[in-house]
Image (cartoon, rainbow, N blue to C red; front, side):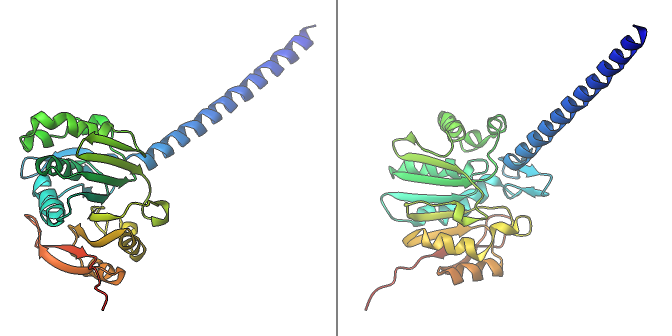
Length: 270
């Protein structure tokens, strides 16, 4: 009887150990999958204050900022609003943004749409959506003296992804979570009047600065559409030109000598 009990206890302890190890292995696999899922969906960021008082984010893994450290609002307004949106004379404007980021470009565009009574349909592509708790810390409404519209800034971030949402009667937002480094991932019947190309710098995110991407953007443009970017590299200018855009160098925002603006010039038939 004692021999049987010893064998039974040994059997029980051995199998409990196997079951425990299996459970630990399964938990480890789940944890690794959890980490991987969060790695591809989110970026680790740190809140910073730029020289014009407005916030931006720093990405330690890329050693890169979302905006110019000389001034986030200054840069966005100069590159995308003054050189892009305001140059378009249409009474209804379709905007495509590559890189939703902090939502600053979208917020500035929304304010322009309200001020000028221009209906805007705004589609933004983003691979790494920002956590809402970080978005709540951003001080753009305060810095722009738009406290009364602070709720609209938050609505840009809380709006559901992958469907069009009316934020105001003059501004609808369609945020799309996608990896645009493969431009075939994005299909739409919408044609755009203004494109904000606001990916991370080419040396930090080279997969976002390819001929295939600029070719795709050209096909998505209406005649006389405008594309602007903070990047003035010669290689980027040549890719835009090869895609079909007429490109000009413009004075850059504070801290940057130049920027680029391209136009899909409407060809007149003889």
